[in-house]
Image (cartoon, rainbow, N blue to C red):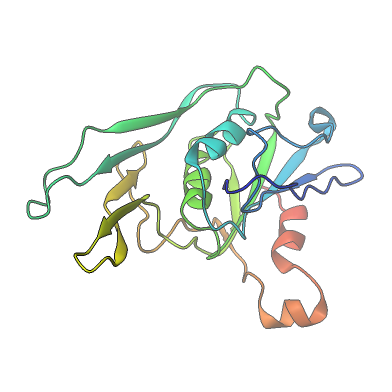
Length: 208
């Protein structure tokens, strides 16, 4: 999430559920769309194409989706190039309920391999929400860390991932990514050729 400011793509539906597409480039200070969410039974959130950005924007969106405080994730950075047991102190990120208009009903989130970095921390930030967020699609990319930038003697610049994001229970999704609750292929050739979106269709008809 995050990136340069741009106009987000948000498509309200006529009646439940409402849908909110969160794209890389959205930068609206975490404010939800202007849809009247209070009248909706279900909210579909679609960050499937999200190449990363700022974690705090994901936390801000999550704050509009809860009435209670909960842990989003815990982050540490490796601080020794040899000793793998040496890490920074744990930094805990917490979702706190927003005082602005919010939605506390059923949430369905669409996920897939093009949800990367901050797109994934946003997904992780919703995992402790109640009622539970139902994830539909495929695993996210599995690359959570910020970039540690280094310069070689010849001037070349490279980056490393030196952080780990864990759930409150200590689980990390680096590598495999965050899995869906309901597996549906994301943007398969057949869907693209037919001009349809099987994941969104499943989400609109989903029942927990």
